[in-house]
Every structure is written in C-alpha cells, then in structure tokens.
Image (cartoon, rainbow, N blue to C red):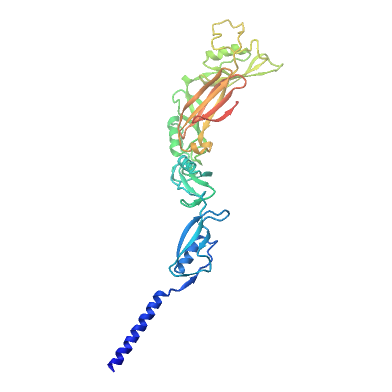
Length: 400
C-alpha cells in the first residue's frame, strides 16, 4: 500500500514538472497591429499594453507630420512573442529644430538667440506686466518642442499698466522738482512751457495740464507751465515799417535773432516789416519770425553775422546777401516709436543738418531710456535736410 502511494505521488510531481516546463518554453504569440500613421506615443502605448517593447528610430518622410510612425518591423499582422522588441520608424525631419526657451530674457538677447538658431521671430506683442520693460514673458511654442516652420511669436513686457495714475497738484513747485515727481509716478511725456514772468519766484510751476486730480494714462503728455525770471525775458522791440536789415539790428540789440522770414505783397500797406512772432515778451536768444511786405532784395536783405553793427549808418542797405535762416523745432521720444531695441534701453542719438552752410552734427549724445529730447535747430537755405541716427544707423531723413 505504501509503495502504491509513493508511486502515485511520484507520477503527480512529474506531471506538474512537465507542465511547468512546457509553460516556460511555450510563450503566447501576439499579432502585431498596424502602427503606421499613429503618433509615436500612441503607438508605443499600444505595444506596451501587449507586453511588447517599442524601439524607435528616426526617419525623414516628406509630407508627414513630425513624430508620426512611418514604418514598423516586424510588419503589421506578424505574430511575435510577448516581451519581443518592435522597431518603429518615427518621422523626424533633419530641418526640424527644438524651440529655445526665451522667456525671461530681454528682447535684444532673445532676438540674438533666435537669430543664432536660424529662427525667425515673426511678431513681438507688448503686454502690460509687473516684469521690467523689455523682458520676454511668453512664446507661442513650448521650449524643447520641434519647430518646423522656424517661426516664433514673443510676448514682451511693456512695464506696469499705470492707466489709473492720479495727477498731483504741482503748482508752486520748482519746475525741475515737479518734473522729477511726474517721472517717479511713471509719466514719460513731460513738456515744460514758459507762460509768464515772475519777479520773485522764477522757475516755479504756474499751471499744469491735465489739471490736478485727473486720472490719466502714464503715456498722456503732461504740460507744466512755468514762470520765467526777468533776467531771461526781453520785450520784442517794435520794428514795424523797418526794412529787414534794420529790424535785424533792433532785434540783435534786444538779444534776439531773426528767424523765419516770409514775404507778402500788400499794396494797401507800407513796405517793410508788418508782423513779428512772438510780438510781446520772449526769452533771450529766441528766433523771431518776421513778415515783410515787399520783394526780397534791396533793403530787405538779411545781414551776415559780421556785416554791420548798431553803430553803422542805417540809411545804406547792406550789399551782401546771407542765407535765409529759420528755426526748426525737433522732438524725439523713443517711447512713441515702438522700436523693440529702444524699449527700456539707453541709446545714442545724432541729428545731422545739411543745408546751404554744409553738413554738421547739431546733436550727438547718449539718451536715457525715459528721456524726451526737445530743442530748436537753426537751418539755412531753402531746402535743408535733417537726418536722425540711432546707435549709428540712419533712422529718418526729412526736409522741414
């Protein structure tokens, strides 16, 4: 009896061993699905679900989306055992580049990085933000992703949105102090205009526009009307009826200069000067525009700088014709131009004049990022040419 039980136990153990060995060596085979046309991540997921191991290799197939499966080995329908490696070809064109991370860079550095990678920044959108002006905030492609069209759109900070700034009352402050206070609040377009004369408080703000307590944008122009001191103000002399050269002598004696000269013909009025502008009080050295009734030439000839002095005989008109001279206002505000390279950056500004007296630089200096340049340029002749250079490059040329 014991022998029989031992024999049965031996047969059972042997059968179980044979079954285990057979299961070990016999692995279930799986028919491969068609992976072509799928995104490689979806294809890899399908293989892993079937306990297969995906192995990718790059291919370059025209007209097929990037990261799409373009081939597989073994082919679809082929039966393979679980755990088998399956090779899938993924479309990865050689001209595809990875999108760089430009967020956080200033716009100049971002543009340089894109240029070095042969990537075109097709548009720059400026956004109000707490970040410093000129810093890149966003880009339309995720960093590290493939960039086939090599084109990027960047979002760049233009600084805080100060659309709700309340204007303080600056009346009575020194105009320089008032200007500094406005700049500290974020205003970038500040104009100062002499509007009155003060004997005891020259240089103080007499009025402002917009008025105090108005809520305006930081880009709104603010005008400060200030008082001039009596030492810097002169009264324009009465030169009505005088020929141009005599009017010039009178204006020079008052510390003024002849500016633009205009000729008219009015038979109902006497010859000579019929109008000047300004006509009352003005600042020493101001060019005065003169209107002459009569034809150019003869007594209506402008004196050169050293052709005559107030002690000369006034009845003999001069014989030398000097170039017509006039004053041209010039204002430059980089904040209004929208040039990315000038946002929040200091720059070199040069203004070149070409007229009847030749070519010369009348302005050449470093300009602060928030600075507004406003001045008056004297030009000679009928067709002067003004040229503006920014950081050495020609920006604009015009004839005033």
